Amino acid sequence: MVTGAEVRPRPRRAVRRSLRQRCGPALQRLGAAAAVTAILAGLGVVAHTGLTASDPGPTTPAVPSPRDPDELLRANRDALPRADRNGSRTSPTPTPTKSYDPEDVEAEVIIPRGDTAGPCASGSAVESGLTQHAIWVHREVCHRWPEITQYGGVRPDALPDHPSGRALDIMITNSATGWAIAQHLRQNAGRLGISQIIFEQRIWTTQRAGEGWRWMSDRGGTTANHYDHVHVTVH
Image (tube, rainbow, N blue to C red; front, side, top):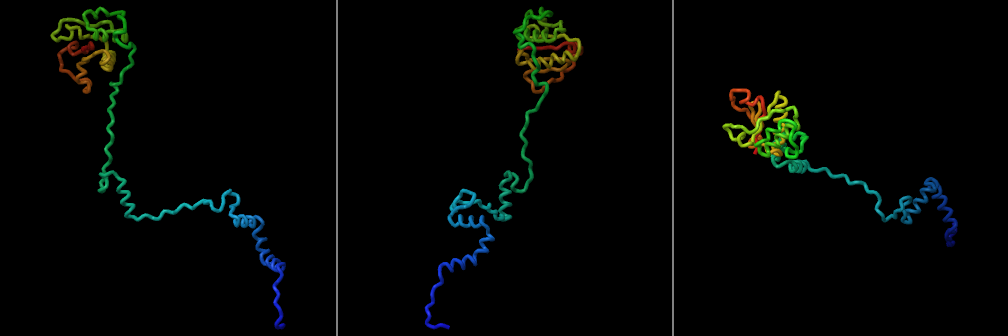
């Protein structure tokens, strides 16, 4: 042992050689790419992203904390309609829908309006003494159903409709044609100025249109009960 001898510091070259000996294997395991990434991170750069270390990276969504069962019950109860909050299970009142009656659908009209149609090939003599609306009804029927050739117009009667020229009798040969005419006139009553239609002992009026076809009392005969003709009264 040397006493009083001066202790000299190790040369810097020896220190570097010692660090390489100790850190070399670790750097080799990291590989060149990892080493570059580590160096860039130390300089404040995130590799391959174009972001700096100060930029926020992707965040993990927060997991919601479980809600208290009583709180969930209150939330669900408040979301119910007011009538259901006390435990009742009443169904919501359905929205009323308009009733649909196929007979209320306006039928196709070949003649746009009776007053625009000229006199018919047959039966036009009945128009003498009729009001304008009654003439419209006659021309609507005679153009659409040319097979109908017999009509009744102005004549004496206990009721004022025929004497005043506001009524027309359409003579038919079968029930199907009669109902086709009656339904067509009913569906176009507003356009033609019709107030009343009678056929096969049933009557329809604009005043009680919502009731549809109503039965009439028996008048004792085919013609009196309107089985052989459609009776039309206009305003």
